[in-house]
Length: 541
Image (cartoon, rainbow, N blue to C red; front, side, top):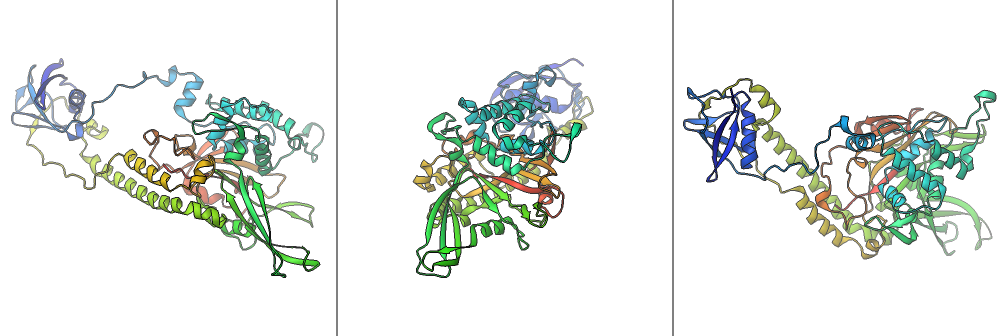
């Protein structure tokens, strides 16, 4: 049957719409939505004698054939009219590799060029620092390694195929000769480059980036400051006190650090315990007041927390009896959220506590709102008349009229748009940030961190085995900005925080790694064990 031109009356206006009796009723409701703005799940289409239902047949109404020019009454509150897409729809088959990589937002792997898994895992983990890519792309690095890393990241973002990092590997071996070491255990045609330590690679690469210019809140380069100092460098205050001479003055020194260490002993079960053991240590040295060797206690605390905090799980220790490093395979649980207030100086803790305490409370409120939205969505889903299930059920070609159904129950506790809450929360939290910390762009203003990247080691030996990288999916899919709290637009942020899964980078093989499986890389055997962990300071927004 040919489409019919009919009228719909809504809010005192008579509008023209097309009704095709051969299509499902949900299609007619969608057409009405396009001209009235009333969502199909809140819409009642009425004609003399009753209400049109989605499962009705459209060829007759109360035994009467449909005719052109009929008028339907539409009841329902109108929302915003659907907007046309900002950009024309482009199908995947019409995209080039660069456009497809952006559309799919799927990260790519790196080919193993012969014992280069340590480098591949490190490069992938460093991608969890988007500010680094901004700094590399907005400046003209003088050193060869930052330029090579910039080009590698650029290539990785423009393709859907695994990347061969031959150029970057060549530069890495040129700049850091230790990574050009050959494997002496093999000779002749089988000789190749030796396996290296991923933690050493992380440290050496970070040092090689020390001259990359800093950036401001807008992403522009800042003269006279360096990116690594800004976002990755912490300051450690160490106090050394003699246990045997109470009158001897303690010695206080300040040191710049790129990482904190987690010592692993036979009693270490949790990362926090291992970190505190490393910060509170005992040593023996000559005492000037006693004139002999004496025992000292060294207490170390962070006086500056960077936006990105690196934790080194000290899994390799030198064993004198075998003359080489051996792996400590003990299972040590690491935290996906890390509260660093226990490892900072009292002065810094005083500055961080107000905003840290309030952010914890706000995060609980955000979690409750997500639960309410889920329940509301679940409650409204069965009543929707425009979903695929309802449309599939409408297999007939006509419409019948039934008695008006009872009005759907309203869901209590309706929430405003999430951006409204986030704007208010951001304003409140920014008012609690210490002025000195606010001026130090690139430091953590909360002392609270989220885990965003992991480098793991698989095997029993330090100079062998296999390294892999793990990066949180939100890093690649519109995660919240890290420290640019004052310039971040809450309206542009993504508030779907339910996806906590990860990407696993096993050289050129990339797969989704469920968050529930993070416990499998705590250690406890020769399988993959967390070795380097990268934490990102929580965003205020």
